[in-house]
Image (cartoon, rainbow, N blue to C red; front, side):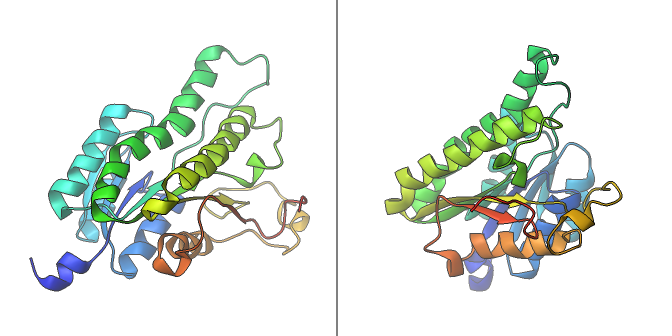
Length: 238
């Protein structure tokens, strides 16, 4: 391995095969990161192979799959500099009518995945002397909607965990932030959605990816414990 390869940072991205996760992976690759990607389908393996990285099939809510992903990153590249916790969408339904299994599924997917990844990677970053985590949540964590009760509840919890972790490890030069996308073109949106956004348009995956890359970089070295909204101004609170 050459000196330049040794200097190249390594990023783990869950949900990294499609949509915003894939856009973030491509942006990080363009900035010199070596990548370890995971997705429930083969898409992460295919994208990783395209970019000279390593990919596995697995789910963020599965503790064993997270262990396999971290092991793959470390065995392939010897280090982990950045982690992007990005998941799919948890179950939807009426606030009280949904059974507890759906709530527990959301808890595993959204909250425990972040906790477990932190437990796996923080010791590695402590050895290295630095590192950065980024948790992809949603603008609705601040302004919840009954259309997405599980997502809003648990992604708000991730915001709290982000601050607690950041406070605990800031002095160790390990940062954690959350990125809160608004309506992004990774999904189809109802007619009229754009008109309700101050910027009058749906956000682009590339805009999420570039913000993510900034927050993981040394350019954001004094930013930690923050919930960064990238939503075109759709949230109203200050």
